[in-house]
Image (cartoon, rainbow over all chains, first blue to last red; front, side, top):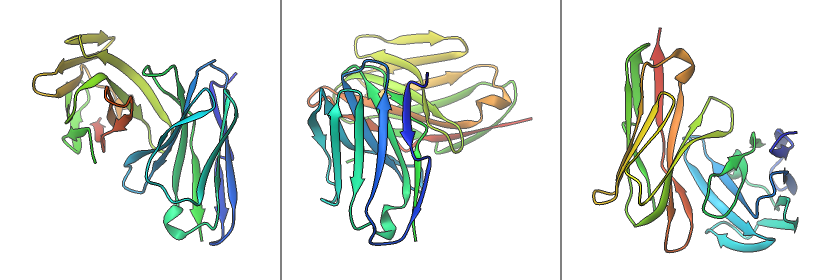
Amino acid sequence: DTAVSQTPKYLVTQMGNDKSIKCEQNLGHDTMYWYKQDSKKFLKIMFSYNNKELIINETVPNRFSPKSPDKAHLNLHINSLELGDSAVYFCASSQRGDTQYFGPGTRLTVL
Amino acid sequence: SQQGEEDPQALSIQEGENATMNCSYKTSINNLQWYRQNSGRGLVHLILIRSNEREKHSGRLRVTLDTSKKSSSLLITASRAADTASYFCATDRNRDDKIIFGKGTRLHILP
């Protein structure tokens, strides 16, 4: 009965590959987010979806494409992975403007 | 650009002492939230304080908000070893509902 879950927990891949990270929330929230936390622990928002619609799209490369098939899911697809994409990616959900609940994170390592 | 800035970046105190962390931000907000992140884990929500509130308590946590100074503080009283973690403030900007995290304060409780 995990509130916000992400898969996979760890992802190790070669440069140039395409990969996806999945996120699901069972809290009934209408807003979901993707964050990137770099090696210096700086947490930066990448995308935010509200009721399957994109509402925040920070300056991230076009290689990153979020997809929200329904309110409870927000997946992140990354094309042509680069070394600089190595980070921990967190999914979160909330009722808009309220407390965010975070997933456990996906540690992506690009070799 | 960075919205929240925590101060200090790192803090080491003896177990039992009180720990105070500060957060400053730049633009007007709807609310401010404090989160804790244990090493290698996701973020856990601690307290949300709305822009019309000045102080909030939760157990050993006390949060203040001064909108005139655009600053907040998190006080942890009677610290314990389990409080060792990074603490982040996050502001919900009222012009676009964007949640922006600071860089965090790394708190280390010494036995």
